[in-house]
Image (cartoon, rainbow, N blue to C red; front, side, top):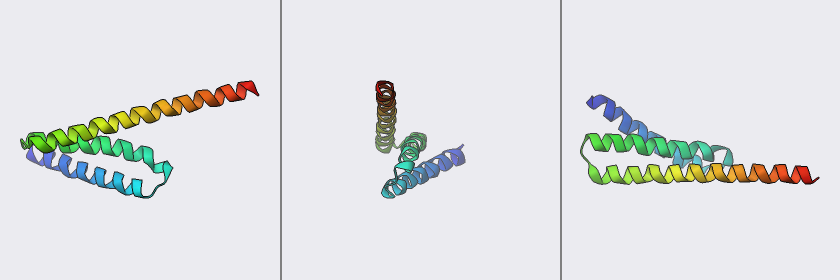
Length: 93
């Protein structure tokens, strides 16, 4: 069981670092991937911290995951809005 939570912790760290690297590329194509990587990375690290009873980093990573979830929700909402606007513009033409 310990090995599973160690793998989750290291995988989560890797995902968050990779998400940060993708953000530095400033390529919009990768930004959506980064959001999901942040979400999964935060959850994986939080599980690892919970297993080891490390409560402060557990809370931090849960908040990290909540922020990532809100960001994903906001992005999807904005994409939906843009899609509606495009349809409206096409209908007006």
